[in-house]
Structure formats: C-alpha cells, structure tokens
Length: 407
Image 1 (cartoon, rainbow, N blue to C red):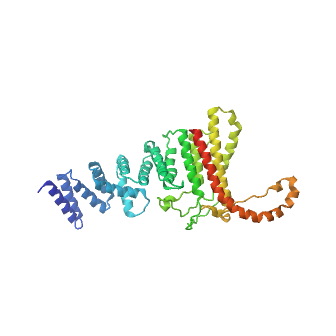
Image 2: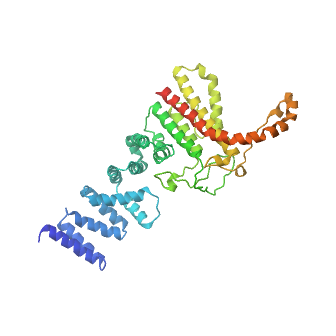
Image 3: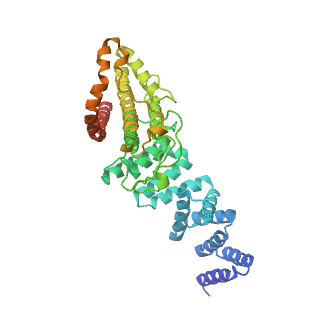
C-alpha cells in the first residue's frame, strides 16, 4: 500500500472510532502523525475531532500547527473565515464563543498574522474594512501602519459608490470606529490639513445622523428616558438600519457628545488656544469669544490657527443650537426628535418687556400676535423644511473654505 493510501486508511479508521471510542481514535491519529508528520489530512482530522468536541485548548494548539505548517490549504482559510466571522459579530451563541476561545489560545503574533492574511482573502470592501478594524482594535500598535490607509479606503469607497448621504456604512465605520483609534494613538503624527479633513467628515456624519428625516415605515424609538438638560438624542436610540450594517451597528449613541469630544482631540493636536477635554458647547463658544479679543496680537501663524479654531467652533455651536431649537418647536421634523414633555425646554419669543421704553408697544403685542398667528403657522413648516437644506448649504461652504484654507 502506498504512503497516501496508508494515510487515508488511518484517517478513515479514526473517523469510524470517534463515536464509539474517541480515545482510540486519537491514538490512531497520533500514530498516523508520527509516521507521516507532513500529511495535512491527518493533522486536520485531529483538529476537526477536537473542534467538534469543543475542547478549546487542544483545538487551539492544533489550529496553530495547521496554520503554521499548511498556510496555503484552502480548507484552513475556510476554517479561519468562520472563526474571524465569530470575532466580528457579538453573538452569544455557544459555538461562536467556543471559536472565539480557540482564537484566544493562539499566540499574539500568530493572531496578528492570521487577521492580516484573512484581510487579504476578503474582496468585499466593507468586509475587508471590518476585518482590518478587528486587527487594529486587538493590536493598537498596528494603527500606525494601517490606520490611515484603512480610513482613506473607506472614504474612497464612499466616493466610488456615489452614495447620496454621509450616513452610510463606510462613513459610519470611519467616523465611529477607525477615527478614534487614529486620533487617540500617541504614536500617530498627522498633518494639520488631514486632521481638519477628518474632523469635517466626522462633523458632517454626526450632524446628518441627528437631522435625518423620519422614515416612511415609522421606525420606533427606544423607551429610555431622557434626564436633565441634555441633547434630545442623548441616551436614546432608534430602530434605524444603515445599509450594509446590522441594526445594532447602525446605532450611534450620544452623537453631539461624540462630536464635541472629537473636536477637542483634534483641537489639541492642532495646538488650538486653550483647548481642553470635557468642554461643553456653551464653554466652547465662551472660549471663542475670549479668543477673539487678543487674536489680532498674534503672529501670522497664530492668527491663521485662531481663525480656523473660531470658524470651526462657531459653526458647530451654530448647528448644535439650531438643531435643539427646531427639535423643541417641531419634534417631528427629525427622526431623532424628542417631545417637549420629555425635555424641559423653554422658548422665549418676546423679550420687549425687558426694556422700559416699549411699554406702549407691549400693550398691543397680543393683538399683533393674534393677527399674525395664522400666517406664522402656515409659514413655519415651510421654514423648517427649508432650514435643513439651507443649513447644509452653509455647512458645506464652511467646510470647503476651511479645507482650502488649511491646504
């Protein structure tokens, strides 16, 4: 009998013994591996038995052996694809947890190499990005090498797909997953122009996310309560699915707070004056007003940096305030709306009583309000509808000017 025939016989015999006597089956395969150490089928059969029995440690050792000794075998990569798929999702399924445990038993360098190889096997842009993102999260040192290239590939994919909204799967992965890894890595050194570009992309995504229109199918809001004078979107989520992502992956919690935190990090990296963490939007505006007092005394480089800081911060405060105002007076305009009853907003429409020289005018206020009431109600919906279009026109003008200015 040939060597190949011997190997096939030993593997077949071991398979027959598994249901009756698994220890005898293992003995046959150990003998077979001793006789034919370079045979892939014998080692893979040993791994299959341990995997099917869900013995984590021994399955991990055997997976390591076949990955190192037979890296070009297609069946090995099919097995690795199953394991990495379990790593990418948050399933609590017992078998998925077992596969994650098998991966954890592998040495760190082998895990890194396996994820990189698995990334090369992906042809779908989104799947490849998710695989590489898994690598970056597990091995932060790889962010320096792969972080920017991953971010640029996601932004390029968005352009190639010609998507009509920034709220898409590529931008979401870039803004919510990749960009924080890049900005928070102390070993990254990015040019100011690139930092501003990424900040503008993130701002566009977050603001588009909170101002998206209610869906036609009546997506239902979460039932969590909103407490205190916080953003209307804070602490709540909607059943909103971004194309290409799961419902869970589509949810962005506390978008305004995330945007503010990201601006703070970028500001620190760009040497903004007095930038610090945990700053609120009102404090951001206050800091800008202080900055305007002495910016004329700075040199040309400092003046340019102050201008960039003032324009960026004022733009974000403008949209933050406008969103809250419109959300308060017409909650149904945005999908991430809140009702006045759930958030203690106060709308001030008439401050004429503050001034002593308008007493006569104040007496007739109720008459004017009654005459104009019908006209205001008719015009309000048109104004709010046009506000979103106008808002984005000005937002893009600001961002375009800032990018050109920085470059």
